[in-house]
Length: 190
Image (spheres, rainbow, N blue to C red):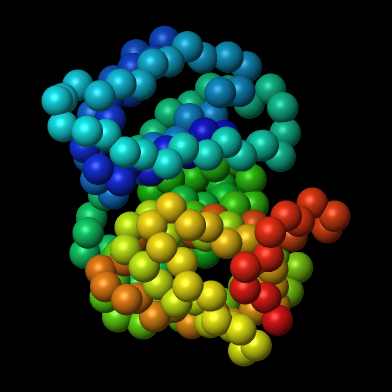
Protein backbone atom coordinates (compact mmCIF):
# COMPACT_ATOMS: atom_id res chain seq x y z
CA UNK A 1 0.00 0.00 0.00
CA UNK A 2 1.60 3.25 -1.15
CA UNK A 3 0.26 6.47 0.38
CA UNK A 4 1.36 9.86 -0.96
CA UNK A 5 0.50 13.19 0.68
CA UNK A 6 1.18 16.34 -1.35
CA UNK A 7 2.71 19.15 0.73
CA UNK A 8 3.32 21.74 -2.01
CA UNK A 9 3.16 21.92 -5.78
CA UNK A 10 1.48 19.49 -8.16
CA UNK A 11 2.03 15.73 -8.42
CA UNK A 12 0.96 13.91 -11.59
CA UNK A 13 0.30 10.16 -11.43
CA UNK A 14 -0.02 7.86 -14.47
CA UNK A 15 -0.35 4.08 -14.35
CA UNK A 16 -0.83 1.00 -16.53
CA UNK A 17 -4.51 0.73 -15.51
CA UNK A 18 -5.32 4.02 -17.26
CA UNK A 19 -5.38 6.27 -14.18
CA UNK A 20 -3.97 9.74 -14.71
CA UNK A 21 -4.44 12.84 -12.56
CA UNK A 22 -2.65 15.79 -11.02
CA UNK A 23 -3.05 16.52 -7.31
CA UNK A 24 -2.23 19.66 -5.33
CA UNK A 25 -1.49 20.67 -1.73
CA UNK A 26 -3.13 18.53 0.93
CA UNK A 27 -4.28 15.88 -1.54
CA UNK A 28 -3.69 12.24 -0.75
CA UNK A 29 -3.39 9.31 -3.13
CA UNK A 30 -3.05 5.59 -2.58
CA UNK A 31 -2.01 2.73 -4.75
CA UNK A 32 -2.29 -0.96 -3.94
CA UNK A 33 0.48 -2.47 -6.04
CA UNK A 34 -0.91 -5.95 -5.38
CA UNK A 35 -0.23 -8.40 -8.19
CA UNK A 36 1.51 -5.72 -10.26
CA UNK A 37 1.08 -2.27 -11.74
CA UNK A 38 3.39 0.09 -13.60
CA UNK A 39 3.24 3.75 -12.68
CA UNK A 40 5.07 7.03 -12.88
CA UNK A 41 4.88 10.17 -10.82
CA UNK A 42 6.19 13.56 -11.73
CA UNK A 43 5.99 17.30 -11.39
CA UNK A 44 4.38 18.90 -14.46
CA UNK A 45 5.14 22.45 -13.33
CA UNK A 46 8.12 24.67 -12.74
CA UNK A 47 6.84 25.13 -9.16
CA UNK A 48 8.79 22.97 -6.69
CA UNK A 49 7.02 19.81 -5.54
CA UNK A 50 7.16 18.43 -1.98
CA UNK A 51 5.38 15.25 -0.95
CA UNK A 52 5.52 12.57 1.73
CA UNK A 53 5.31 8.99 0.47
CA UNK A 54 4.99 5.96 2.72
CA UNK A 55 4.78 2.27 2.02
CA UNK A 56 2.58 0.17 4.30
CA UNK A 57 2.68 -3.63 4.14
CA UNK A 58 -0.85 -4.88 3.33
CA UNK A 59 -2.43 -7.53 5.55
CA UNK A 60 -2.50 -10.03 2.64
CA UNK A 61 -0.66 -10.72 -0.60
CA UNK A 62 -2.05 -10.98 -4.12
CA UNK A 63 -4.40 -7.99 -3.94
CA UNK A 64 -5.87 -6.59 -7.13
CA UNK A 65 -3.98 -3.42 -8.09
CA UNK A 66 -5.96 -0.33 -7.19
CA UNK A 67 -5.54 3.45 -7.28
CA UNK A 68 -7.48 6.27 -5.69
CA UNK A 69 -7.15 9.78 -4.35
CA UNK A 70 -8.89 12.55 -2.48
CA UNK A 71 -8.43 16.29 -3.01
CA UNK A 72 -6.94 18.28 -0.20
CA UNK A 73 -9.46 20.49 1.57
CA UNK A 74 -7.69 22.94 3.87
CA UNK A 75 -10.94 23.43 5.82
CA UNK A 76 -11.01 19.74 6.78
CA UNK A 77 -7.59 19.85 8.42
CA UNK A 78 -7.72 23.41 9.78
CA UNK A 79 -7.19 23.39 13.55
CA UNK A 80 -7.89 19.65 13.88
CA UNK A 81 -6.48 16.24 13.02
CA UNK A 82 -8.49 15.15 9.97
CA UNK A 83 -8.41 11.42 9.22
CA UNK A 84 -7.43 11.27 5.56
CA UNK A 85 -6.75 7.53 5.18
CA UNK A 86 -8.06 4.45 6.98
CA UNK A 87 -8.40 0.67 6.85
CA UNK A 88 -10.95 -0.81 4.42
CA UNK A 89 -12.26 -2.91 7.33
CA UNK A 90 -12.81 0.07 9.69
CA UNK A 91 -16.57 0.74 9.90
CA UNK A 92 -16.04 4.10 11.66
CA UNK A 93 -14.18 5.26 8.53
CA UNK A 94 -17.37 4.50 6.58
CA UNK A 95 -19.33 6.78 8.92
CA UNK A 96 -16.68 9.52 8.68
CA UNK A 97 -16.59 9.13 4.88
CA UNK A 98 -12.79 8.74 4.81
CA UNK A 99 -12.02 8.77 1.07
CA UNK A 100 -8.70 6.93 0.99
CA UNK A 101 -8.88 3.32 2.16
CA UNK A 102 -6.02 0.82 2.44
CA UNK A 103 -5.66 -2.87 3.26
CA UNK A 104 -4.04 -2.44 6.68
CA UNK A 105 -4.97 -1.27 10.19
CA UNK A 106 -3.39 2.16 9.67
CA UNK A 107 -4.89 5.64 9.96
CA UNK A 108 -3.36 8.80 8.52
CA UNK A 109 -4.23 12.21 9.97
CA UNK A 110 -3.28 15.70 8.77
CA UNK A 111 -3.58 19.03 10.58
CA UNK A 112 -2.71 22.62 9.74
CA UNK A 113 -3.06 24.76 12.82
CA UNK A 114 -2.11 27.80 14.82
CA UNK A 115 -4.19 26.54 17.77
CA UNK A 116 -3.42 23.85 20.38
CA UNK A 117 -4.60 20.33 19.52
CA UNK A 118 -4.94 17.06 21.44
CA UNK A 119 -4.43 13.53 20.17
CA UNK A 120 -4.73 10.26 22.05
CA UNK A 121 -2.94 7.03 21.18
CA UNK A 122 -4.71 3.99 22.63
CA UNK A 123 -2.98 1.13 24.45
CA UNK A 124 -1.50 -1.33 21.98
CA UNK A 125 -1.18 1.37 19.29
CA UNK A 126 1.71 3.51 18.08
CA UNK A 127 2.09 6.55 15.87
CA UNK A 128 4.73 8.14 13.70
CA UNK A 129 4.33 11.92 13.61
CA UNK A 130 6.02 14.30 11.21
CA UNK A 131 6.21 18.08 11.61
CA UNK A 132 5.85 18.94 7.92
CA UNK A 133 5.97 22.74 8.35
CA UNK A 134 6.34 25.14 11.24
CA UNK A 135 7.23 24.22 14.82
CA UNK A 136 5.32 22.63 17.67
CA UNK A 137 5.74 21.62 21.31
CA UNK A 138 4.48 18.07 21.88
CA UNK A 139 3.56 17.40 25.50
CA UNK A 140 2.70 14.16 27.24
CA UNK A 141 1.89 13.95 30.96
CA UNK A 142 5.61 13.50 31.74
CA UNK A 143 7.60 15.43 29.13
CA UNK A 144 7.53 18.11 26.42
CA UNK A 145 9.56 17.99 23.22
CA UNK A 146 10.00 20.74 20.64
CA UNK A 147 9.73 19.70 17.00
CA UNK A 148 10.48 21.81 13.93
CA UNK A 149 10.01 21.35 10.20
CA UNK A 150 11.13 17.84 9.12
CA UNK A 151 11.41 16.56 12.71
CA UNK A 152 9.58 13.35 13.55
CA UNK A 153 8.51 11.43 16.63
CA UNK A 154 7.74 7.77 17.23
CA UNK A 155 4.99 7.54 19.88
CA UNK A 156 3.56 4.60 21.84
CA UNK A 157 0.19 4.33 23.60
CA UNK A 158 -1.49 4.65 25.86
CA UNK A 159 -0.56 8.29 25.52
CA UNK A 160 -2.41 11.61 25.67
CA UNK A 161 -0.62 14.27 23.65
CA UNK A 162 -1.06 18.03 23.60
CA UNK A 163 0.32 19.98 20.62
CA UNK A 164 1.10 23.68 21.00
CA UNK A 165 2.14 25.25 17.68
CA UNK A 166 4.75 28.01 17.80
CA UNK A 167 3.43 29.42 14.53
CA UNK A 168 1.42 28.01 11.64
CA UNK A 169 2.17 24.29 11.83
CA UNK A 170 1.44 21.41 9.45
CA UNK A 171 1.46 17.91 11.00
CA UNK A 172 1.08 14.42 9.55
CA UNK A 173 0.38 11.41 11.78
CA UNK A 174 0.42 7.69 10.93
CA UNK A 175 -1.33 5.64 13.65
CA UNK A 176 -1.23 1.81 13.73
CA UNK A 177 -0.97 -1.25 15.98
CA UNK A 178 2.17 -1.24 18.12
CA UNK A 179 4.98 -3.45 16.85
CA UNK A 180 6.80 -4.73 19.96
CA UNK A 181 10.55 -4.98 19.59
CA UNK A 182 10.67 -2.71 16.54
CA UNK A 183 10.92 0.61 18.29
CA UNK A 184 13.45 3.20 17.38
CA UNK A 185 13.64 6.73 18.72
CA UNK A 186 11.02 7.64 21.35
CA UNK A 187 10.54 11.40 21.45
CA UNK A 188 7.50 11.69 23.71
CA UNK A 189 6.28 8.91 25.90
CA UNK A 190 4.95 8.32 29.37
